[in-house]
Image 1 (spheres, rainbow, N blue to C red):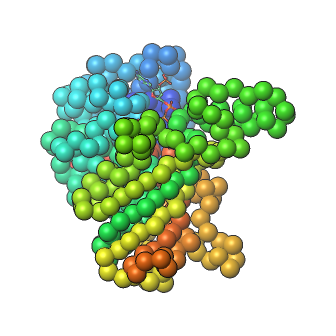
Image 2: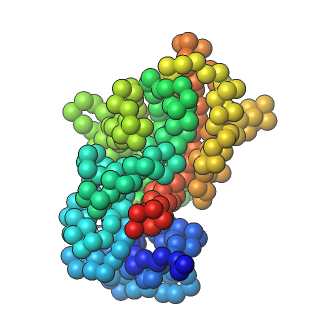
Length: 340
Ligand code: NAP
Ligand code: 3JN
């Protein structure tokens, strides 16, 4: 039987996430008949290398999706809102990285290791949503515990890399750091405060309830993916001067008791996870080790001694890979294998 191959489009191909999607398609040998690299008018004239060949970047327009089977979107929420339905009308299935469609009840929100069955609902709108990066690594690590013991409440604080804000923020951290160590004035273009040698408890915009939109994404998306609206989730999201890799301090209250040793053994069985938890040897997950990898790393697993059923842990993953590009490509692989 011949292998199924698809005509693919990548919208946002010149961005931090789009760039990694292209790498990921290449690395994972995604079976392609053709690939179209789309971005804004500003990028027309640029070329991007894919499998050793240079491809011209095309402007994303209403006619970009004719004869395209799958489109991976990472060009911002407004672009997804406008163009995903146009693509879907052409019969193209959209895997969207923005928050535009995540909470739409007719759009599945998928992490392949956690809720692969949800993908079947893609037929309702022709759109599948990729969750927020901070949510993805959280649910990959917590799903085994939820299945075994039931999770009652999650308290999470994040330490998020600047690459989550895109290519301009990567440049801002680099430029500010260079200015600071040379005793020069620095510029602020992306964040409201200096990010070099600083932490900002502010990701995305503030909402009326005092939380940021990033924090509320974590709350709502976690419940949707774990398919349990009864789980209490509260989040504080913080931007830190790290280029790649989000870290999370997580406190979980379970319904049934689980010891730290049992939790560690349970997580060690998961192929998408790597447990690094040898504090006596100073071994625990680090953003610098997770960068460039597709696994989710878990460590510092210990019992919360302040309650009867609680576990604390430290979860790290590459926000641009598992948090965005890799998860999107994994969804496209599942779609191709099981649905198209
Ligand atoms: P980025 O580095 O700033 O890149 C933005 C990309 O979108 C560029 O390719 C840009 O093209 C393109 N674009 C912007 N406006 C466009 C328009 N009107 N028409 C066509 N293309 C347009 O940002 P990024 O970090 O890659 O993030 C892109 C999006 O991915 C975010 O806005 C977000 O929705 C999503 N994202 C999701 C996660 C997640 O947690 N899953 C993480 C990060 C980002 P030009 O180069 O031509 O301007
Ligand atoms: O800041 C981070 O670390 C993750 C950022 C994700 C992001 C950035 C801009 C727009 C998103 C997202 O995926 O939630 C969006 C969006 O709302 O689409």
